[in-house]
Image 1 (cartoon, helix red, strand yellow):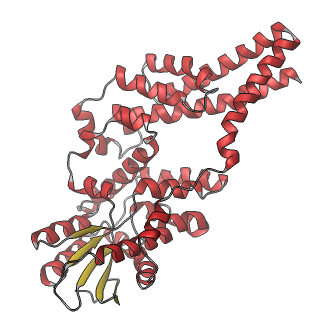
Image 2 (image 1 turned 180 degrees about the vertical axis):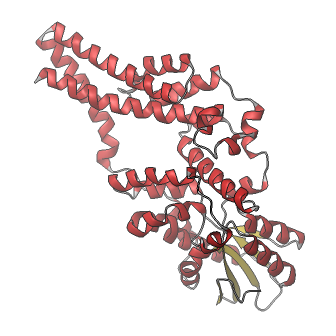
Length: 397
């Protein structure tokens, strides 16, 4: 069964690990996983999933339980949008090939449960991975990463043979494979760090394994792109709880990044004071510029996102004030208003993944439209802050 599959069998601290490299959209990979578990003598099955993606794969009603208000307040819109984009991309490919995304992971779960084997979710939380990736990138790398999301909405057909070649990990890695080759930051966070994290999880879980065998066996189902790295790190004795804690820590923002919003606020307020001290008419002119640019550009952002008229109005009224308060964003206010005036219905959550498969569906579905309102209103507000700030100080000069 393993003869023509990417795999590696290694032993560490008396436990034999069978590392199986798979394609995440491949019937062949799913069939191999099923045969191995049913006919093998494993004591546990480890899979390349975190708890969040495990629930997404096993809970068909997962999107019904989304709490949009909580997501907005906790600033999780980016993570949710990323998950939706990846999920929609996988579903589109699966529809072409007649197999659901993550079929081999789901098969591993079902087959392991049928034999009453423990299932270990060994991957790192996708939100942490994305945040660590983002914090490690330069400005231009961040721009490239954002444009890389266009790959989620390409409509070209992908053959089964091409999918079998797509053995570089999950859809996130596959979509950004070219970027990761040219960016040490993306490669480190998306691939290398996760290899280390999964190796540490294997060690931690293995020490709790209840087995009477002299040499317990664990089947590890991973994307083939992780096969080499995970094999190497699993043989390192220093992968433990300390490794997990270190790789789950979100790197702090650079000091200048944390201070920049407050510095902008101080500069703008200083400009107002300076303007009024110079000439009252100049001070009022600067305030007018601030109100107009922030209100109009934030309103345009909300309008481009397809926001309700009340949402657009809320964005326009909130932006001039939220731009001077780094603790709250205009997009948060606008998204909350959009959620309240056009509250998504149950069927909207049920069709969420299907609608997200097309770029136009993000404007059609009320759930994704809320995410767009949050993002685009903030983009408009950010542009307005810089443009109006420049014009204010042009007047002073």
